[in-house]
Image (cartoon, rainbow, N blue to C red; front, side):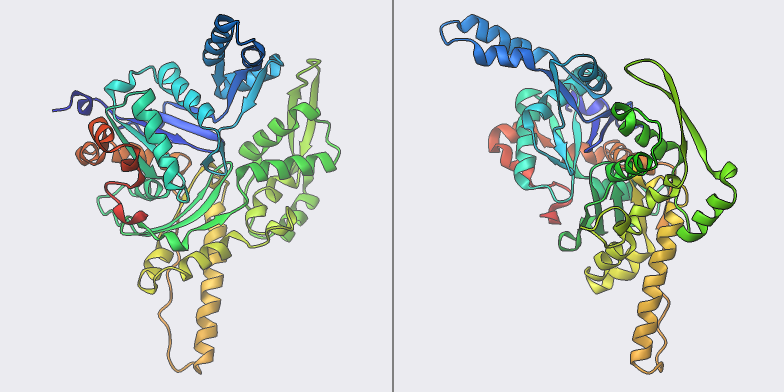
Length: 428
């Protein structure tokens, strides 16, 4: 028996905004860090500027550049305190853009945070549903060549989120995953564990856009927030105070009638001077999450509300799966955690479905009555880490180790083995 199979697998969910990492079998990830790398530019420049004759200086500068970097909150702190550190965000819109930075990021995750030997553990990594197969090959190369892992499984995050929605033994792997993270939002239909690739919808509004909108609203109102701190304040306001309302006009009236009840106060300290400041948080509390339901208030480029996107996604799926898909709409990602988000989504989606049924009955003269379509949006306490938790559950099963690509397979066949999932072969 492979000794690595007796140890818990490492589960890393790399998101655009945050990376969740930990060991299989745990309920929550051990660490949640921003997906950012800070590299010391002075060493890189030194390496570039060294003459060819001075090979040793060039080599040493290159080695120091390889060693002197930080990830996550440490990276953000370093970039603020020192101008020699440049920030690099390796993932944008759910896709890896900078593989060098990604390799460094994984290096710190494994050795500095999880503090484990990668040769002793199987690894489960996640990817976005629209990722190119070449990206899987790069991931496989880095994991097998650089870290020498004994086994690797690359899972589609939506399938893991669907698995995380079930706490009972009855595990029907059919449903729609509404995955809204910090930098990417996808609506992914899954039938019996297989992603219906042709029906995947991508939404260009995600958690970061809500933060930017809150920041914009506070700036337009002239709130006393230092410019260098405004994005961070907007993010904290979004996470602590924002909620989804049922009717935007009624909500405005409530705020105007009883401002003392609804307006919150934020207190902070200016990073440069250390002086205290305070500001009010008003309409942005409900206008922030409203961008998912009325996106035109934020951008004129994309004006399709999220419930309409979900409805179109299900309507483009095979007809025999549609009722099951409407019945199990699973939320995933931190940006679905707003209070009453699932209720508003279910209500708006139910209106669209009911209107379509009435219109079709009217077309045929009302002689045949349709069966009502059950619309159910599933919200659960673990949805913020749904993808990671689903990975933790999957990597705890005995079948997981048999499904992984092994180092021996990689050495025999090359990186192309990583192009397909061994369990869900129908995905690509």
